[in-house]
Length: 113
Image (cartoon, rainbow, N blue to C red; front, side, top):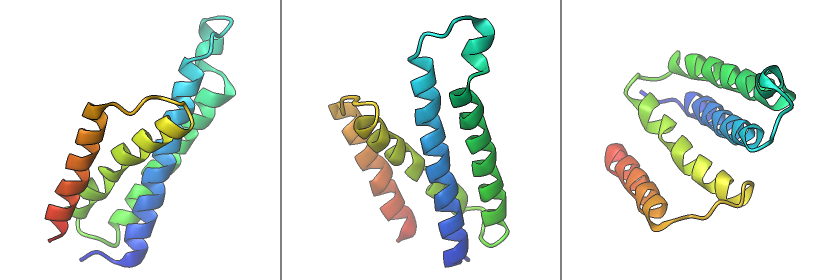
């Protein structure tokens, strides 16, 4: 059984995780002054805190739904990251990325039938 509230909680967690991945990528693209500054800057710390919050959302969501729905909802994160990287990081959407995202969405449609 999949309740609407669990679905929304899981989707919020996936979205938070996607934004944290973008934040970590922006930190990786910046030249830092040294080894410690590379890992102890606000982007990295906030990114990992966001991943922790995402994990807590997932645990919370799993209390109200069957385990089989989790991976399906989590796969939406790949699509969100692709869109965010295109919009925020100005990365190019290649044919392979588009085909991969179409396959993910098609798999979700088949799973939900």
